[in-house]
Image (cartoon, rainbow, N blue to C red; front, top):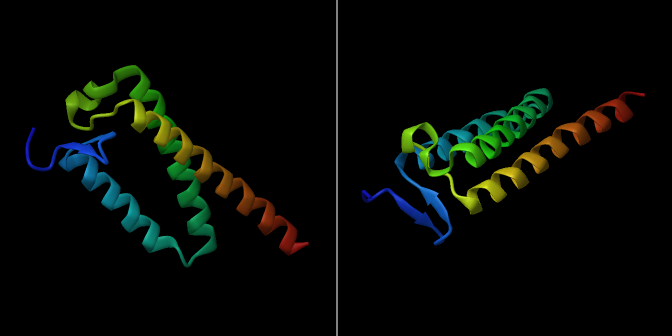
Amino acid sequence: MGPLAGYQLGLFAVNWFHRLAHLAIGGADLAVHRNDSASRAYALAVGIAYAGLFLLGLIFGLNFLGGLMPLNGPDHVLHLLTALVALDAYFASRRDATVSTT
């Protein structure tokens, strides 16, 4: 393990690529936060991506992408919860947009 690999908070398997991916996700969030339709699209994309990561993590685990992005049990739980929250935000924002236009 290199200096940028290990376990975040002693739970989540991380490395340089995993950290870079989270920085990119946060940067995209900051880029769209003032636009309603872009925020909805972002929430949907994040929900789908994290649901996919959850499923791929269950299948491949620490060997996901040849070990480029290690995923362990706590990662699976966090990815599932993040997917559920993001998808809930997407569907809730669609309901709010429908209600406010009528």
